[in-house]
Image (cartoon, rainbow, N blue to C red; front, top):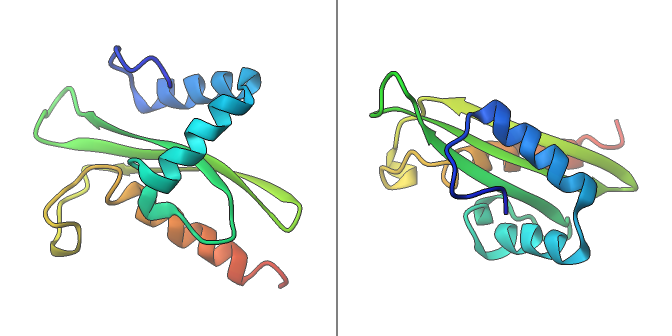
Length: 124
């Protein structure tokens, strides 16, 4: 959805997403939702909350053995709209991620925990 053919920095990913959302069609939003339901962001899916978003895993230029992982998305809960970005610098694969260090395994998991915390504490 966001110029897949080019390499970008996390900052450029955020800028591209913001620009994309401003002109997104219903079909574009459907693609973002499907990415959460069945794509790279599926670990963030929470029943009853329509979360939309994309993931990115970028290799670091100064050390190609390390990555920066990002989830960028938005959702609506109880009439309040939220935008969310999680960014992890040099995450390591663990047993719970089957050794993977990509954004679909860690940036989305962190984003899910943040959203769950918002939902659990909404009425505070």
